[in-house]
Every structure is written in structure tokens, then in C-alpha cells.
Length: 257
Image (cartoon, rainbow, N blue to C red; front, side, top):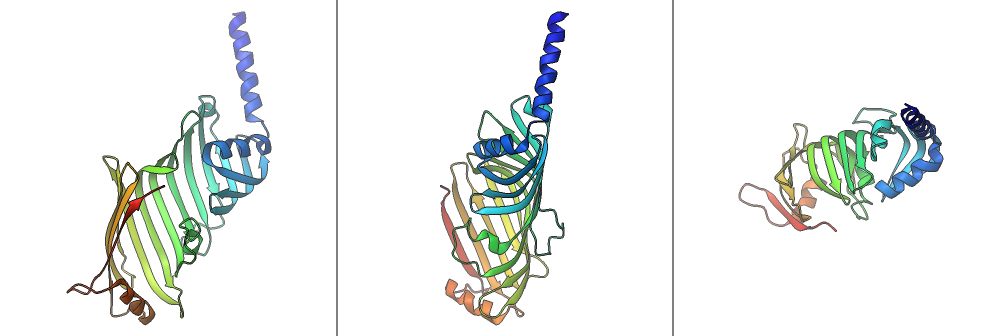
């Protein structure tokens, strides 16, 4: 009986210490080591807190909030509900936001995101893609039931992504409409299928795949419509000759670092 009481006291003490641990001391260190995130202006407690700004590689976001699940943390798993910049959930507004359920074992490099949904301005993707300039404006909206990474490399994904209110921003701005990609995983291969939506002002059809070894392949076809803006149609000529149906072809392959 005495041993059980002592064990219960020690466990309660540990739970209390973890639950009320200051976020500014533990969260930045934990997330930087486990996920490569850098947090600034941290406030709150370990289990529930916020940060004024967060950086991940070349991306930055404001107003990160989290709620950590204590039961999973005691099992050496980081499990949390995460929100970033929830000023508006309208994917067509010029803002950024993200929500997700995060699961990460503290003993491995596997990261699982579920119910992942968010919006990022298209131009914000230039730095992570290592491009000096993106000729497109608009918003990238994404919703994934599941996204799993190991060693910062995606190994499983299921969901969709959309380019909304897309604009051509070389010379005179011109609206291009909306485009969509659906993503799934089969036998370790992540595959995406992309196309133009009803509002798209050019025809798009293509697919891409990412293999378990990190190699990827992408094939796409583009074709101007009658209402395709002239600057866009003229720029497409740089892709080379069209086939008999008027399609331009793009083929890319390589390997992730």
C-alpha cells in the first residue's frame, strides 16, 4: 500500500511539473530539436501556449498556438493540436493560416500530420522552392487527411491542393482562374493528379509521382483557351512546339536531397 501511494505521489508530481512547465523554456528547445522549428515571443505553458512568430526553413508564420496532449507526452510522443494565424479561414483572402493534428515520437524522426488544412500565398513559396521569382499570384489552399514524413521527406500523403484566384504577374496582371491537384499513396509511391477547374483560363492536365527512394517524375500538358490572356499565351511559346491538338508538354524528373 505504501509503495502504491508513493508511486501515485511521484506520478502526480511529474504530471503537475509537466503541465505547468513554462513554455518559453521547454517548447522552443523541444520543437527545434524534434521538428526544426524556431519559435519567438513564446508565452503560456508547455501543454497550452502560443508564439508570436515561428520559422521553418525558409517559411515564417505568425501567431502559433498549440495544445499538447499530456497522456501521449508521458509515453514519449509529442501529440498536439496546432493553429497558425487564424485571422480568417477564407481560402480566397490574402492571408495565411494552418490547422493540424501533430504526432511525433521523441524516439524517431517520423512526423505525422492529420486533418491538415491551410492557405499560403503562392509568392511565399518562392524561397522554399529556391526560385528568385514566381510569376504567379494567388493562394495555395491545401487539405490533407494524412501527411507523413521521415527525415524531412514525405513518405505518405492523402488529400488535395488548389491554386485559387491565380494571377499572371509578368507585365500586365491577368487572372488565370483556379487549378487543383489530388494526392494519394499506393505501395509507398505518392502520386498527384492535377488539372484546371471550371474557372481556369487555360487547359492543364498532368501527373507527378514521388518514389520511396526520393526520385520524382512530373509530366504536364498545357493548352491556351480562347480566353487565355495574351501575355500568358505568348509566354507559353517558350515551351516549344505543340502537338496536333495544340498541347505544350513539360517533363521533369530528379531526386529530392
